[in-house]
Image (cartoon, rainbow, N blue to C red; front, side, top):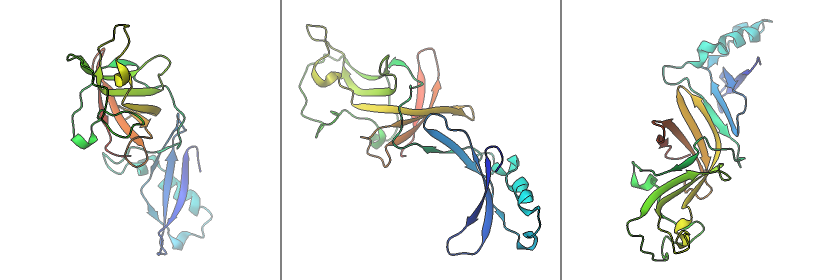
Length: 218
């Protein structure tokens, strides 16, 4: 081992071949540990008895050029702490949003903890329905999404019934920048995908606008 690089032997189950790979770890940030693996190098029995064998293998396998598979396969994989510890979300404020993509992957109107989407209290919203995504002061460790929020208020200036309850609550567990892209990991125990984690790539496109792309599964 040297700094953040570790030489490891890999034995394929059911076979006798031994390969060496190098694991490069980046120090834990939030709930995320990023890592990448080098190209494999075969064990050479003919020189294995040499005193400098392992040192030579380390210099070969853990050289920085060994981590570059091609122009695409050089980025990091990651481990996520489960269950995670919430962190402040990199996106703050309140936004409207539009969803583009497969219908099965889009967020939909639901009552958190409820059995069915309907019935709901029937309230005339007079075309004041809007999508709503926000992470505000005091709740800045969660992104709250409401696909069809009624912005109409009652006579006391309060939101109407359960229409003020966010449909989806995403907990921010880590974010970083890599290859000129900003990444965000969220956790939602009510997400139907296996693992409940989602990876997002986000980019600021203006003073008040963002573009986000979400992974299809964890």
